[in-house]
Image 1 (cartoon, rainbow, N blue to C red):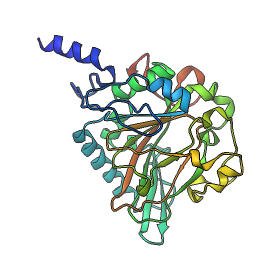
Image 2 (image 1 turned 30 degrees about the vertical axis):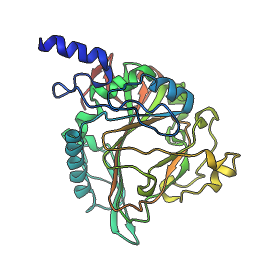
Image 3 (image 1 turned 90 degrees about the horizontal axis):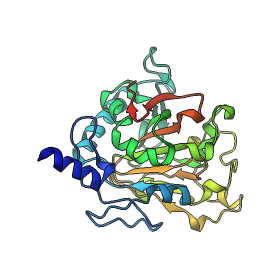
Image 4 (image 1 turned 120 degrees about the horizontal axis):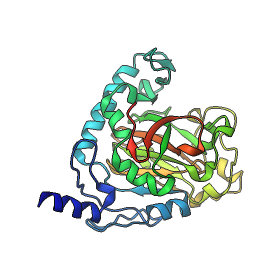
Length: 304
């Protein structure tokens, strides 16, 4: 009877299949289907996340991770932050993992803060497990297939009240170098963001320009790092984009946001009374990229 029940559950909702650590049936609220950000009613599952991603350049899948799993993820992120905060800016933590780096800055209001950790999964088993969770594959496979490499893995922090936490408007294609190593970039890459805290406009949620993935490389952000630039709508207006079309990617803990390499986005300061933490992982169709670390081969998770 248990086997029959699990099979029926998987047929009802393949986004909430068997996880890496046993059975997970989830309590999903569905996939966002409207640009207004309305949520599906409990138990109502929409199957249009792939279509919405292709149409709008982004989408949101709700309640992918349970509250208990989010708590576990939050504890792992806090462990990384504690390790990062004592290190100099952009210094590798572990000589055996040269991709592990911390970006720390002196904030005028909060003192020394860590903004970004790259490839933290090398340092924590919880983060390593989440990057290849089968639910992530279930979300990604309809978009970019079952054999995926991972190009980015980052933690982002926006401590409550901190000032130096903005990301100017940009497209992630600016970071994919050399360009020759990324083929079919407009349709082979998906960036994912797992919310650990509530993401609202007041807490520095991602602001995103729908359908901008169709506009090609707009050259936003200039020459300097986008994390050193203020979020200003003037940058959009200079390129003929109407700032009134922007949407706020509002997430609850456990939600997963997705966007493409050419989707225009940025984020502001955190005016809320809580931190804003997010776990970002970017995946690419393996056959379309010469770089990266394997995440899934023919649907099978590839541990680090």
